[in-house]
Amino acid sequence: MVPSSSDRSETPGLVLRSHTGAAYRFDPGALSLELLPTGGPGAFRRYEWLHTPVDLAAWAGRSRLVPTPVLRITEDELTAARAVRDALWRIVVARTEGTPGAPDDVRLLNEAAALPPLAPAIGTDGARAWAGPGSGAQLLSTVARDAVDLLTGPHAQRIRTCAAADCQLVYVDASRPGRRRWCSMEHCGNRHKVRTLRARRAEEEGS
Image 1 (cartoon, helix red, strand yellow):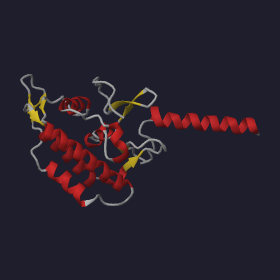
Image 2 (image 1 turned 30 degrees about the vertical axis):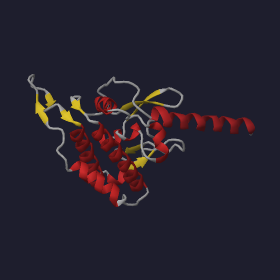
Image 3 (image 1 turned 60 degrees about the horizontal axis):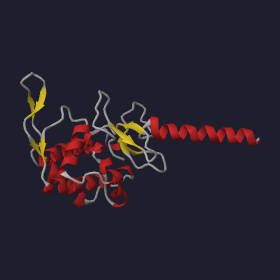
Image 4 (image 1 turned 45 degrees about the horizontal axis):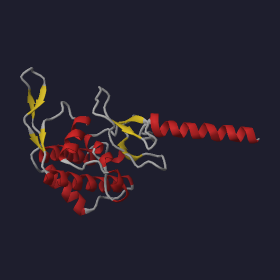
């Protein structure tokens, strides 16, 4: 459930590894949703990846934030990031079920969003940069603001959970017809195709 390397490409999303070790690209469609595969509440706790401030900075380097911000993150900011991530998990799962997020979770997200975010800047080479170094609180505010935009924007009703029974990854269905079912076609989508093909062959052989 975590990024497999620090390599980045022009393709948005994270490179994750399945329980078999196979790498695949997962694009949840939003910066805030990229934070969720790093762990979470309840059953997701076993996937916890944000153990140190360095881990959170590494996640930022693998996220869709461009360019990678230079960050100075404290232990308290790391703890706050995990708490907001867990709250966001509960909020988006509630949204997929057609219910509002719990007030305490929404408050936590709003408080993070109210902090100053990472500030964009023009670098000495004329390219986009970040004023900095940034703090963990600024990084968290940037993520929280993205979540607020997502949850109150035109795609708020298109937040989905992967249709695979053994996958809980959440994404924004930004496809024109709104029929995206899988976290990744090369992972869960492909597994579904393989199972369907095997079932069809077994039925044909048994008939």
